[in-house]
Amino acid sequence: MKKKILGLILLFVVANFSSCDVAKQLAGTYNMTQCKYDYHSISNLSLDGINLQNISSLSSLNPISAAKLLTAFNSASGSLPLQFTLNLDVSNPGIQTALLNGLAYILEIDGKEMTTGSLDSKLQIPGGQKMQLPVNLSFDLKKVMSGESLTAIKNLAFNFAGIGDTVSNVTMRLQPTISAGGTVYKSPVYIPVSFTLNKK
Image (tube, rainbow, N blue to C red; front, top):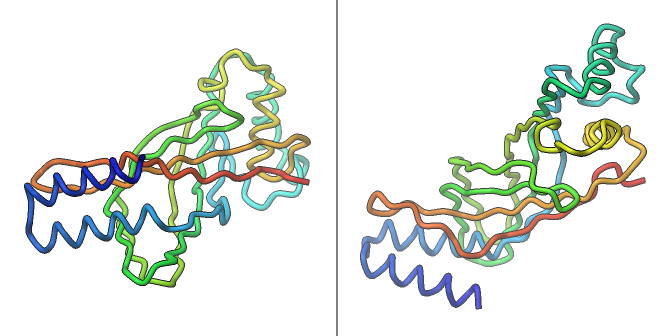
């Protein structure tokens, strides 16, 4: 059903904007929805401005950074901004080129929405090839996890760093977009990418 809806939207856009460039974008965007999306890695990870990339434990941080994080975790007030780049592998199984002109996204962790946003990055994937799609994300852990225990917030942060004691189930929902005639059209099909953080 979703593919039928997508087809109707594509036909509508083609009928109103029949230039070769728009038709090429439409075909490429449709091919993008047929690609295979997989988790690759997390990079540029920081929490409250402290670099958590490639740490082996909290004790591996310098004493000042460790003390700052512990104070933030143990305080019921304040903010705890988490920033990172989610790197996704995008494989095009077809023979035609897949084109990405932009996308909207929703990030959910353990069924809870963490953040939404959009990406203007362009990506062109020839048939039979794979490329990496980086998505820069940021949100305030304390704000989005309001009502959760400080322990739960700490566990989620450490799961991102790969040093947590629990498991977090993550789903990234991607919605390719195309701009034609000054209007942005969104695919009715969300592409889910699911993975587990800190899986033992």
